Image 1: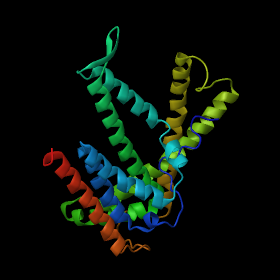
Image 2: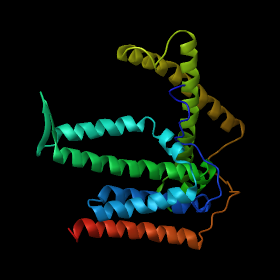
Image 3: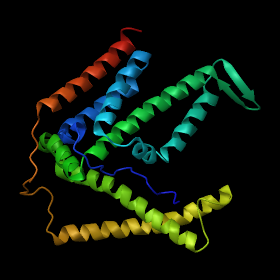
Image 4: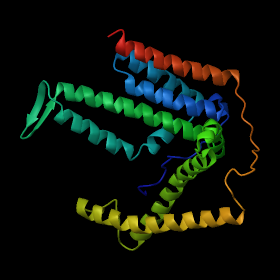
Length: 269
């Protein structure tokens, strides 16, 4: 099986759940609020307050848990390394010691807190991209940035750049998988052999991926120019967004979550 198969980062998962039907502007506003609450949480009340709405949204969206786990395929490595570094570098009560490495109780607790927060951030971000089409993401972000056009911020261009970058993630993964299979057919592999051989094979993978990315970017720019794309100059939108009661409810719940976390962090303790 290829190393890049079944990775779901940046991919839209079709559905008709309540989360899918939310206004993209409401989701774009809710995600950073939940992210801020996750980073500020510092106690059991705060941790549960942030986790419960995320879990409920995940259940309502009806997206298989396996899709999220596959999307975090590489991120688990980063989370594990971060946990180990916290465990051996934080001073405190020593639990285990070997040579220059010491594992402390405080380090383990801080490492678990870090993994918990990062996991919530990752799942929340993936929930946004997997329940919102790229077109709606672009339109929603552009609507949110429109008031800032008065101070010279190019709302449409920023929204388009974000969406194109997000859309290119699964495309690049597909190309990486194709290159990996081509190298395996020639006797090379990044999934077998010693660690040094895997590193060398991975470096050899970057060059054709970079060349393919530049080629795709040039083809996309040519296609946009051929269709007379000129940013938001006299452009109209087929999709009109309208806030509903469920959007306001979700936004209020997100604000309430942030307030509860703040109270738990600075007032109760």
